[in-house]
Amino acid sequence: MSNSRVISSAEIQAKAPNGTVALEGRFSHAPVADLLGAGPWRVFRWHRGQRHYSGSYWSATESSHVIYESRLELARLLFADFDPSVSRIVAQPFLMTAHVDGAGRRHIPDFLLMTESGPLVVDGKPTRQLAQPEVAFSFAWAKTVIESRGWGYEVWTEPNMQRLENIRFLAGYRRSSLFSTDLVGAIEAAVQDGATLADAFAAVPDLDPRIVRAGVLRLPARPR
Image 1 (cartoon, rainbow, N blue to C red):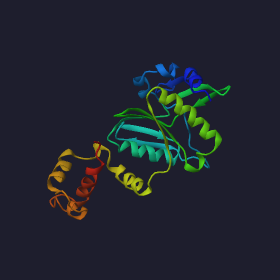
Image 2: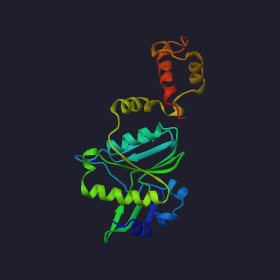
Image 3: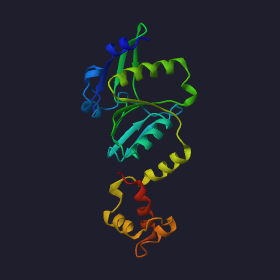
Image 4: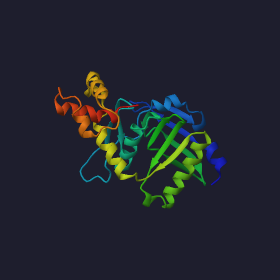
């Protein structure tokens, strides 16, 4: 695979949120701002017996729903949403094409993240599939094109399950509209550094303990 040939032939297409193609041209010249406003390239549907677990997740980072097509993608989406260095999350941000080893190739990344270090393109795949020739080939040329522009490229595999479960649990407390700022402020003022959860849950005895419990769990889940 000639890296220079791949880079010189790389093209990109992106859709508007309404599904129409809104951007076409050389990958190296695609405006980042336009890509961050892109709608998903594919439209997926749910049906009985489907192989993939797809859906949408309400992202505090985006203040809206972001789609995913597998549990692995959902895990990466959760990690991105809790990452303070990530300011934008775009699912299926574009279709990338290039001429590689005598044939036209197509690739749709899973996510485009805007991070403090710049754009990061993410592809998710189970570890057991990474050695498959077609997967390795696709990721290799995509990495070549993406990194030639100075962007980051990541192949996401199975995360640490304990950390994932903690993030998954706290994700339910991410939505700001569900919590009174006065309540959260009162709890934050009453809870001492190093307090146990039991102490934190009892820190505001004048309020309904169920509300206080939710407010305490809101603290580590808040967007940074």
